[in-house]
Amino acid sequence: MVKRIKVRIKEKPVIVKKIDTDFIRLDAFLKLCDAVVTGGHAKFVIQDGEVKVNGEVCTQRGRKMRSGDTAEFENKIYTVE
Image 1: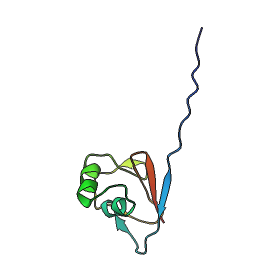
Image 2 (image 1 turned 60 degrees about the vertical axis):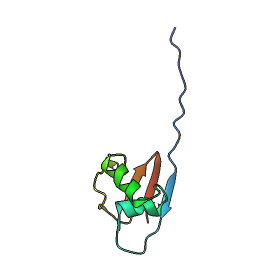
Image 3 (image 1 turned 60 degrees about the horizontal axis):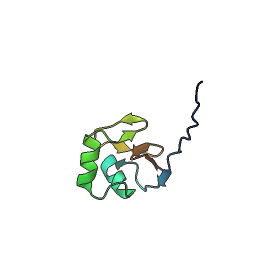
Image 4 (image 1 turned 90 degrees about the horizontal axis):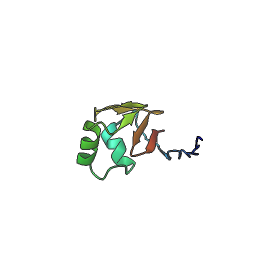
């Protein structure tokens, strides 16, 4: 007898932040979204590979985020508008 287990996959919340410039650095964007407390915290989580940008792990904290780009950290998605 095979038991079947139903699994619910919870959707990740999406937080959208509007910027007034052409781009914003990834570390500054995470801080702006309140995903991290300080710039130093952002540096560590990015360098440790805990952040995905547009679906790929990114270790460059100076990565330029432009309108339409997404960053994923701790099961939340942050979108630049």
